[in-house]
Image 1 (tube, rainbow, N blue to C red):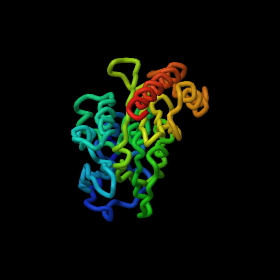
Image 2: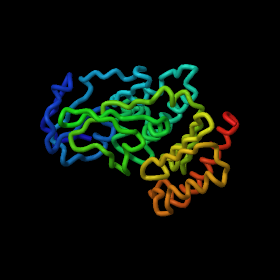
Image 3: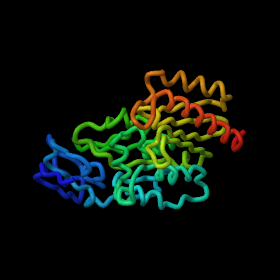
Length: 273
């Protein structure tokens, strides 16, 4: 879609060249959502491609994923043998409801910033204990847990003028045994529930996404039995807090989340008794 309200495009090659934020500004990475519908308030675009951020790097004890990294590039990453949770990367990348054109242009950061419940990069980030690096409009930097980044549909912790720089997935989380479960109403439909579980010694960590407006993280000191797991989920997510849209009714999302979580518990119990 043409954005005929845009009158200026900035193409910075360094952070110092990013123009001071003003009302009507927007950041352009893949643009798959930006150009999909009218943006009546948009007046200036800042094209991030010239910043030339390395898409993927392993440094500082983490896999660092640039916000501008295309989802297809992340999916093509070959995880080392020691990354027992490495299969989650491909599983989440393939949870997109997208054509091949979107697949090759959509960015990891764009999916995070949209903050949709079914955003698979939100699921990946929350499931693997990720953290987000944010460049603030005043020139500062802040780091926040990825599980706290999305607040609800199209709502994140970003303030006007903030820019998501990267997502960091700790190598310690990537080394853990992990299980993935996802369900949708249609074979190629948007996720109705997506649950990721990891084990750390005797403990269990569960990330519930898609069936709730924002990620819900549950941590267990040991491996719970089926009844304790279900009770903990019911206590953490009130009946009125399940997400409700055309991709799944709340009662259905609740039940399938309970079922998927139990599948994960049983799978990881066999991996790490």
